[in-house]
Image (cartoon, rainbow, N blue to C red; front, top):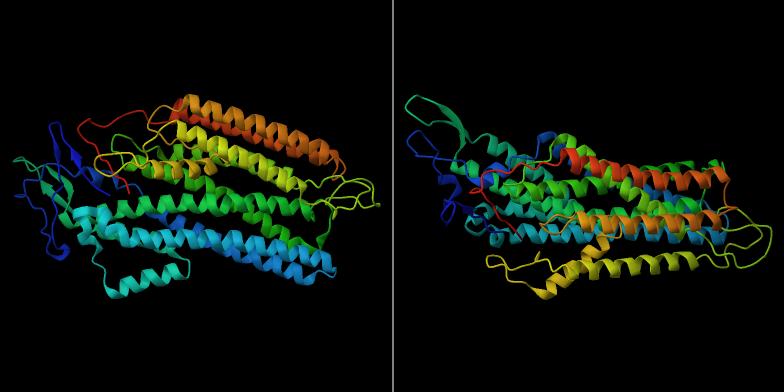
Length: 469
């Protein structure tokens, strides 16, 4: 990451101090003119917000463990060998969805910690970690708690930064203003770097774990419908599944909004969206993602009617069929439909010729990384829209949500008729109503945000910050 400040005439490198412990304090004689631009943009993460992030991360891990244990206990309690084998498979898939993304996220987090010397450029003085600190970081990432370690670091740097505020006399009349010492400036830079990386990791975790987990747990609720069938034998498992679905939905929405906020903090001409804006954006994201995952989970849970077999009926299939005959047809069809959607979105994004992965400094394009970026963003666009270019997105957003609405409506209507004997009419109608209303509320929140809340004011033109990994 490179930090530069653009003045009205030229690009001026920030003043760097070689040793953190030897940095002098500002005083009245220092000639300080202005707080560096990146220091302004780093003052975004509140202590309450960081503590809330730690709580959410801990809850996420705790509910993951509870969910895995509940499914394992359910598999052990099954008396029928076929049902026990199926539940064991559900347990294995759930554990894979939990563990693999956590390993990926912690590997990236650890890599970025030790890449910060290169990313920080002249600010690499911050990277002089003691052996004990390096050991602490490695241990936390080894036990897959790297994201929590980052939030603790953010609290630490925020505290250290607050201790470096000084009142400086700016004129002969004795006017005093708050300024940071050089040491405080460096703490502010490190705070911004870790906050940005944490937001990226949180969003990565959301789309690698939360989104697949949402779909899979909704799928399992259909295949093991204790709520509708009034079977109280596995009430605890179902309650944990519902808790996990709610938490994953909120976490995914929060990760998208947090990432958006960190991007805006990195560009000083982009004001913060504010508390009310955050709430509306979280509702917008939650509603859109909720509609999407309900559709995917519901459609994939249908079991193909392969003809009359016996008098079985219920959640596992249709009336007078044996549901074990063909339980995979609709999951495969679902994978094909959304695999096609992934491909279309990747091609569409690549055709827009963004330069997200341009070389640091000169911005020269890197085609292979851009292609990989398009593939990753294609996966993201299975679930929601993310603006990846610094240009107005009305047209692209309108196209995406129109396609999303058509897909959601077509699949949930198909589910409504194909699952006709699985539940009562009221339940089928309520699912369709929930999907369409959730999408509509999401659109209303979107229009509310961009119509009345989205900050349009810009800071002075000469203040500009560019940063990238």
